[in-house]
Image 1 (cartoon, rainbow, N blue to C red):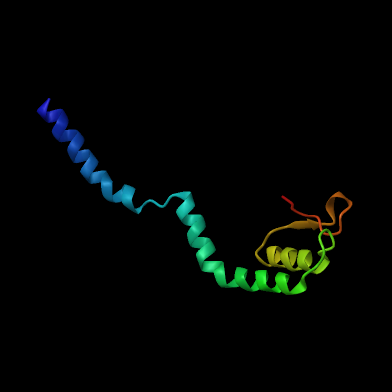
Image 2: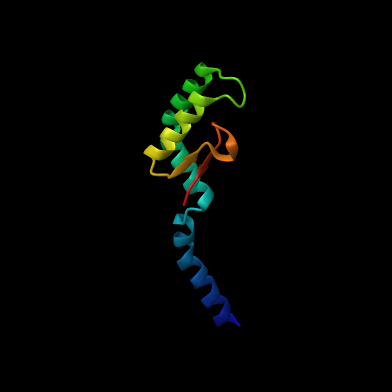
Length: 90
C-alpha cells in the first residue's frame, strides 16, 4: 500500500507542472479577445457613431462583415431577404 501511495503521489507531482501550463479554451478565447480589444473598441465606436435604425443598419452591417472578411472569414450578406443579414459561410 505504501508503494502505491508513493507511486500515485510521485505521478501527481510530476504531472502538476504540465497541468498548470495547459490553457483551457476559455483562457485562449479571453487572450485572443484581449489582444484584439483595441480593434473591437474602434469598431464599436464606429457603429455607435452611425446610429442607424434597427433592421436598417446597412453601414454597420458592412463594417462588421468587412472586418470578418479581413480576418479571413467567408461571409454571405443579405440573407433571409434582409440587407443587413450576415452569416458565416463554410
